[in-house]
Structure formats: structure tokens, C-alpha cells
Image (cartoon, one colour):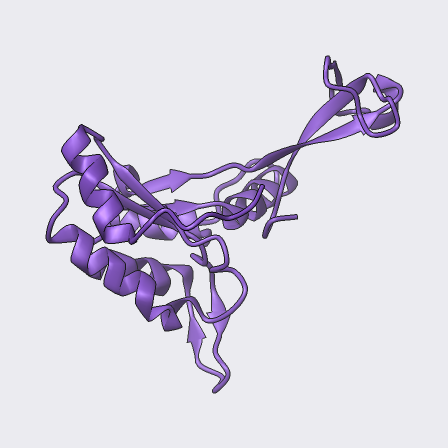
Length: 174
């Protein structure tokens, strides 16, 4: 659907808190595109909201490792730490969680200690890390077409009339 401007984020978060929300989540859905620590408006939104809203604040988007244009490396822990210092109580990891799961299952189901989930939860506690999954349907005509994955019969037919689908986790919106 279309993106709609519903108001200023700090004011909206304050309204939701007043109405009884027990947590407020900010998702910076374009955070994966560029330098997440350069997103000063998001950091300022967190700072201002944390002064007025007294329920857990969660932020997601762009929590990943990257190298800036000057060649300086930042870990996902560096990005998360900046969000925590700006007022977040929790961070939400999406694409990086998919990569961590792929590494886990591909590596004999062994934890490496190097994933963003492990590093951030080690420093800030498990309660501070939320995993966000963006699933999408992948349609198939025959369940055997996606073995060893399990396809299910769906009432919502695929674009080619496919009656079966399986779910895929998206990464970076794709």
C-alpha cells in the first residue's frame, strides 16, 4: 500500500502510550540502505520519545555491520549501542537474523558467538533483542517442487493459479 503521513513520531508514540500501549516500536525500514549511524533523525526521535514515553521502546532497521565511506568498520553491536544510548530498550533484528539462522543450520547447528544476536544479547541481555521476521509466500504448482521444504495448500492462489505455497523469510525487503 501507499505510505501515509500520520503525524510526528514522538507525538504519535506519546498518544499510544497515553492510550495504554505497553511498548512502542520504531521500524526504520530503509535503515539497511546506507549508513545507519548517520540517521540522526531516528536517533533524535528515540531521545525525545524516551523523555515522554515510559514503556519499552524498540527500534529496528539497519542493525548490521558495515564499513563507512572513509573505511571505518562498525559492528552490529556498535549500531545497537547507539540506539540504546539514544533511549531504546530493545532492538529488533530482521535480515541479520535470517543470515544467522542460515549460518547456524549450515554450520551443524553450532553457535559461533559472532552473530549480531549473540553479541548484542551478551552485552545488553536476551530481553533486549527481538527478532523480526518478514515472511512471504512462494507459490508452487506441486508440493514436490520445493522438497525438502514443506508446501501447504492455500486458499489464496498464486499469480499463476498455484494452489500450494511455502514461506520464505525476506532479507532487506526482498
